[in-house]
Image 1 (cartoon, rainbow, N blue to C red):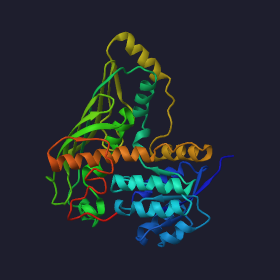
Image 2 (image 1 turned 45 degrees about the vertical axis):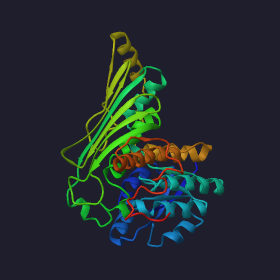
Image 3 (image 1 turned 135 degrees about the vertical axis):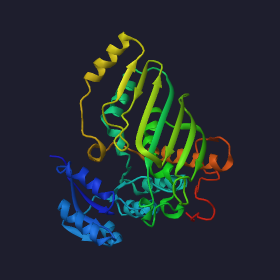
Image 4 (image 1 turned 120 degrees about the horizontal axis):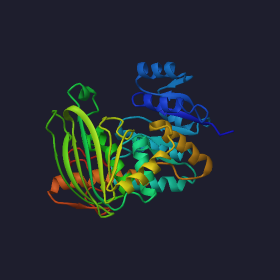
Length: 362
């Protein structure tokens, strides 16, 4: 019988989706306590999901001996300290995106985890587990795609004034960034998931849609370390919301659906260069075994990692790749020049990409 991990959740917003993922894995996880400063929302989630205990004391909850995992679903500016406290208390951690506010915090967390000798941290990138994207990964592993040439990614969503009426949104010090960090981050993670790390980024960014501090529109040109190129566009001013990923390989063109929030799911299109190769691709796709997706699948894989001693399905290095892309884009926007990667400790934005007037000491 599989070990059942006991979970405490901090937050009452995106936590609802996490709770749905845990509910689909009832035999693997038991959510026993929820912590939120918003009592109405927190108590409502406890009632909806049958959570026996509600609290507003995160520090006491983290220190409890009857919890195995702390799941952090709070605004971005609180992530690092909550993760640190949970890891140092010997707990495994799940944390929503964006993980932290700098590459320096990623590297410091790696040292904290190494010193703790046991706890694992899993960042959230649940969109990886849609069947469309997983089929592409399978075809790459089977050698059926050929050489990568070009990837185009569009994250064209709508966010109006009501969205930014939430006090922490749209501000550097609390949201830590704009659409590049909080909205397009999932689609851009798919770029890294398929092709690996970026090598160089040139970016334009602007605030065009709402009177906020952070960017809501951006256009990026990217060189990948594998030699391919990518173009990434993001706006929160698209009245018709779409997300689209298109991958051009020497032997195959792959395109996602346009659904803005589930773009990793089927049906993706896989178009080969010849009839003979199309048959090979179709035969491989016919053998694909459909699995759960989203949070449900990521939590299932995390349970497997914890019980087998393997790596989490999403790692700290994955989060670093994601935040390096964002850091390089902000640096390019401010300098007007391409920014090479990786972002190391001597880079001017290593400790923070926040503008000087909003920067926080680490």
